Length: 550
Image 1 (cartoon, helix red, strand yellow):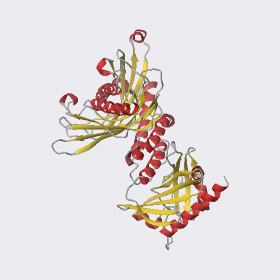
Image 2 (spheres, helix red, strand yellow):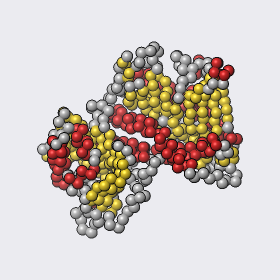
Image 3 (cartoon, helix red, strand yellow):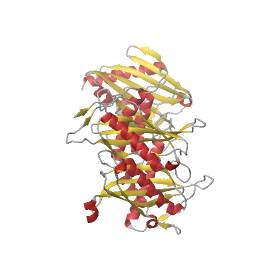
Image 4 (cartoon, helix red, strand yellow):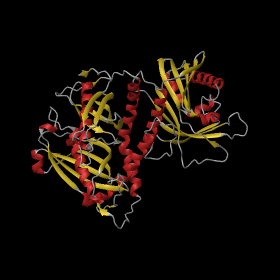
């Protein structure tokens, strides 16, 4: 059974924060907000699917602002991309003060929903109808976020192995983690479930937040504030009549924050008698706490006693490393090179590499500065940042052009800005790190330049999408700067390749730089307009010559 995709657009929900929604500080309860977020996102998913949907997971959530009693919360959700039987839903939460009319962002989150048909017939989702540039952008990046979700466990296990090697618990005043354990039982009743009897994911999240905050309060002796959540993952369903058992315990503390792990198990009547639990959900919630002046309070250290608490202790360290990497790397719109290539960063670096190029390609304000035969050049100025876009009409199949352009060891054959190029690390089939040397600019007194770059390549999932080759600088401790070269940085560069026919394609090259780097234009199609045209011509000749032999 196929369902027609709904037109793109936000599904809105507006709520005034009432005292019943607030905590002792007069701020909107995080649990209540999670319920509203899930409900809005589910409405968006069901609008697209045309059938009932249930929450599969919610990515890491960061809460930037608190909403107070009397203020208005606006939650907007829309389906970014449909993957056969699942969907990514984007969620934007803002708070508005009705007296000042000031609006602030509370959270931006992404959730995954799956269809739940009533009968045995399988539902296959139709693609989302993309109506705006923003729709196209989020649709493209949804695939990258899915890659991160699928690869999360592998990254986590690698970091756990590293963390286990650093097993030191020397704190004299440390508190046993077992003292923070809290257990709570909830009976799922009709108001907690949808019309099919399945428990709302948001309701389970709200219950988890409650029990986790109680666990955290046993350390800080105050009222903890939820600041972020490391991915809610639903392993199985629960229904009306189930008993849900919530177990929360502090896993680790980090000066001004604490991570609490919550495990949820479900029992029906028969399972309850036989003590046969179904593990339906786990999540990790990060709290901080403030005094009356709004100053952050320090948490005491945790001392793991049992083998299980040691595992949780190291798991919290691994998740913190992933959160810090995510927070830094997912700022895709920011113009900055990657600080370090390590296991906790790799998935987010690759995502940000693709995302940064996708944002650059989607920018408005491009102005044509040169048109020559099958080459067209645009520029775009935004503050002190100057960007180039070069369009090349190539008589070569798109998949062949992609194969050639994504292998940077070929660049010396068509780009004079490459003196040498070697692969430093083949991270995966789609991500490689290169070391590149380049001649000095045509200015006296300057050294040859070198670059350490991450090249990320992606093939399209749909015919209308481009092949992508994204390039951005990284810093490797194993490749320090030298006196022989001037280490340069590529903020954002790369190719998008669109298929025109079985034997022709359009290749777009992008490069972004700050005005301070103009004398040292990054390796590739850079320099004066004549140089760009010459290099583009050589690129076309290279692609067509190599393509004719394949």
